[in-house]
Image (cartoon, rainbow, N blue to C red; front, side):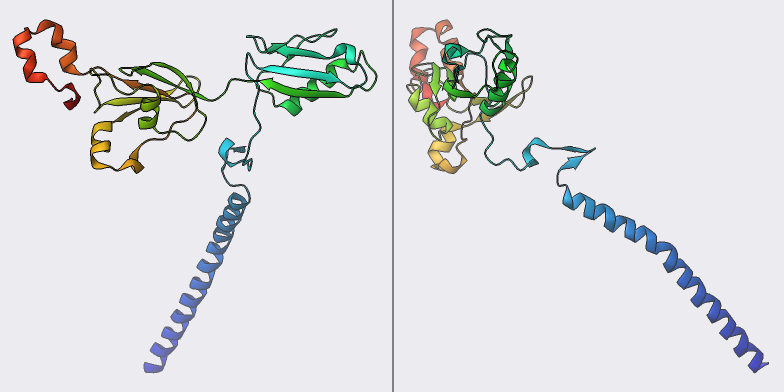
Length: 247
């Protein structure tokens, strides 16, 4: 009986080992597939549904793209009669001399140069075209609300919100220092709003938290509550609110 039990145990152990080997063999193709997918994802970072994100295309310094009201100078080396200085129209087109107009908005200067060369190919033999960007919409920010000089300002260098307010003439006595709003365009149809407590920021001297502007940003300084209701208060009670900057 003992020898029969030993044989049974050996047979059972053999089946268990075979089953384990079979299970490992079944799992192996699945692991290979996962590695293959990971390798594919590594070779194409940022790819989703076959499309690469614009921030991951590898272009570190993208070329400027033309906008409406930009001015370009077009020179044809062997046909100076066709030299011209043109402005990109509000509809995005560029009216060329002697040929059909070309769509220029959104193109880089080299891309526009190729389009103009193609347009003149039917009129001139092997035209050589040079395009120079003469004038363009320079980076800017807008300061509005309770600042000394509201308006549009060129963004010539790295500028923070507090520096932008200073450039715009500083706060007026009616300004609400604790609730400055920074409006920023994320896309053509989407605007992001950030509320900044400039009063607390300056008091704590933590200027590292001061937001840096981007081209097209709008810095809006609202009116404080006391100045809104001042016209409805009797003159005797105004002395209680002599320091509107506290708001």
